[in-house]
Length: 487
Image (spheres, rainbow, N blue to C red):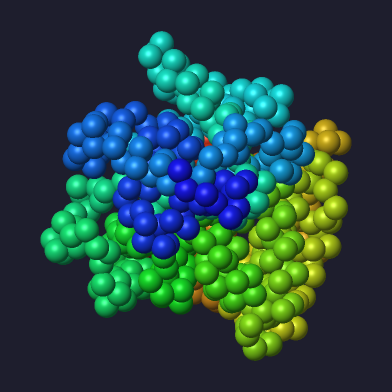
């Protein structure tokens, strides 16, 4: 075995360096990671062989060849000390992100096992699904997955960068058959990565699909991630960062997939913490973290990004816009943690966000800031009504705030913001027991969904949110069942 100048270096980090030196191919590194059991989700050798159209003997030879180059070390057997709540949540978020961007056929089941393991390790009740009851075989697979994930998390290197390995170590699979037609045959069958000219053309297509919302962006996102995984090192830091920035937005829109977290972290590795692209990606990263229950991690990355924004490599106008983008999510995190001992006052933060948007001239984000200010007042008023066991009410000043926000959002002309505002208006009507307001807001949202097809296609989370609010309205007033469209 070869001697290493860093005997305690983690095997994954060491193999990534070997790939960069050209000693190991990206494909063999990906196969070795899964065959050695160092990936978040375990993959049997026969499944690896079938995935790559190889034999089991070939997979074993690849594993032995790569393992022979590793230094002798007991690092893989070392276990980290007990992590704090924030450290444990960061580790779970990192593993969840790798699971979501990695093997497609393991994504759903492994993520479900990770959620169960997180509840067990935190000592919280485990949520049981009544919609999809599991048989004995599925329960056995879940148990094995949880055992593997627990060992994997306990042996994660403490360095944060090692939790987000290079693309070829995370995206360990060939291109799915449904996307093969998007890649020229010469690139699919060749042993070398695609040319950078083709990669630049792929970025152009992705940017056009993202802007026009023609329905191709989701497929092109998967192709972009696959293409980046073919390179032993970054083909071009600027090109890869721009590609991942758009991918992060698309992945966030797909029901806030945790792959967004991996893409945002990769951008920071490529561009540095103070690049505008890295700071904008934190916005999408925070949404994905919040939507998947990693509120402490979202708080950490947002506070760090707001600190980095003061040294951002941009002009003052863009620095103000970046601050608005990040503060919008900080208000939501403060509301998420309002029942805990959080060091953030959501009400004061939302008012400061609105005032800053006006003073800085960030008119594009003024509708979001106005809505954030009213939504904070609404959520805290609903909390007060539950806590005091009284009827929901808002003051006259908050009611005027609603009217002002309604004018700002409708004047913006944004279909997405107007549709989201309709859902919030439904919630306000439920609180006031105003069936007419609920019905009118639901009809407005349904009209937007039918008139703007990309809302249903590219933003499935909005339909889920609408149906949850609709169920609450019907539960409060069963006569609304036939008056609220089910989408």
